[in-house]
Length: 309
Image (cartoon, rainbow, N blue to C red; front, side, top):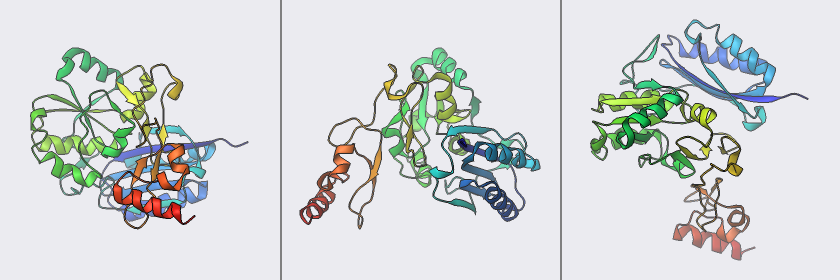
């Protein structure tokens, strides 16, 4: 019986010929039977791939042979190739689409001018020393925070990473500019860029968590400052730390529109005008008339569809 695994990684380093790296990565993944998504730009590489554990080990070895990728840290997660519909390897202007490719500067050491890296235990030490002065700033899409976030975190009103620059420049967060701000995201890559964007806009003391929420959760489970589940971008949709939802320290944040607890996102049934991903309990998803996001117009569509069955 083969054992599958998922690898998550990123590396900020100058890439002179992103297309050549793209072709190499596609060929390597196809050879090893890996599926997933890899983005490459002149700033670096960002990937999530899954497959047989031996194939994953071989991939890491070959990957690190490229001079700029030596020392890349890989995060291992449960899963496999079956968690991805296909292999996608593409060249983009940015490996995370903040809409600021010209503002981002990288060298052989990574992003230039970003926030101070903190290991998970250093995050707790900072909070112990500075108390309520510390602000956790969510670097993900607001939807992701519905099922999990750091305690008392500020969650910006963003649907995509493209929204962050306008949000930062709106003035809403100027009160944070003289405070210690800990930016965080799933695996750390978004905050590599976000922390630099924040510093460029006058936020004086900005930090980021090494390895993101994933590393923090692996270290502290449900006994630290993290609350709830972690949204992930594959078929699993969410993961929990420690003993999961049965852990005595687990805090349930996600709830369906009907009020029942859930960590599962589903698409609204209004395919023509909505299709938003919303938290939905199994019971609401099971019945056509309740398989909607909660907006009146979508509830009306669901009711009409149910009436035709």
